Length: 479
Image (cartoon, helix red, strand yellow):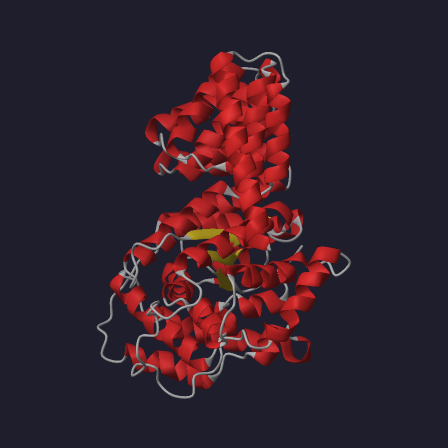
């Protein structure tokens, strides 16, 4: 399932912005929420509903823990420099080679992997995110809803979710699309909103310490990419081209701003190399990366070599990958290198060696989620489920809303034969996916498991009452 072009238009994509007719610096701040029919809390609930659907049904949703962690570190650095530093944000990946990024209501921002791969600097990627953050902090979707009178949370969620569903044969989706059709044409972002997002995004980029010249340079490359498509251009590039006017607007903003060299972080370079190594046919990609490395077509040698090693592993050549990675391990200490070393050992059939690498890595990086996930999974594969369960419990204390951790907990309890705890953990997976009926069913199975003590059963009973009340309220909200 892929993000449709209509959703992309509704979801404020960076590359789809309308052409600003004049400079935007004189615009007033449109972000006042006092008169909004859709409150920030309602926006968040709409965004949560859409994200649950994406996680559950979107085949391009990419939960790579290393790339996602980096994206959130970068995004939250920009949020801290934005006009609303207290707004909660979540940045996520879409496995798609095209250039795109989009903001959903409530602070959820999606970024195509192709955008990261295509960015020539970390500042360019930051420019994309800063623009999308501005759409959220200025409440542009809520303002559009308010401009047309009363648009309830349920109506807006139904409209966007119907577009996300992409299944015209599904009765509920078709009904929602029909209900939303009358207002769909009114949701396109106005030029004022786009100009404001550009203006505020620029200020955020500057305050966060990035190179503001990255914004016009990225625009220029997008414009060139659009020209290359010619008549076969995707609809969003044909209908919303990056024009010389928009580039000029961005260039005018950098006039008088002192030049500041902003080096890329190693993490940006490594994530970019990893995502590039994961594109296309495995052997073709490896051949291209090896050729580029031989010809020194790279900006960072460490990242380029790392990318070649990732591509070798993907091409099922673990011995070559280990040899390529070895010199980096002697000179560079980074959790992504540790993770790759463990994956290479696992692919070579050395599960115990992989676990040793991960455990040593966690001594240096105890809070790295990717290494913790990999360590838990390695312990489970080795049958050391009690150790895995202890590590899962420790991580859930730090990340109580991490669906992947609850799934690992359920798997571990199943291996230990603890049925009540298995069903209880699986119930939390379904809660985080937004499927309350499935969660309730799991808790009912936990009640009947016959292997829980008084305190465990009491916990299940209390959670079951809570979820049933939530389900009743959810049904009321949909009426």
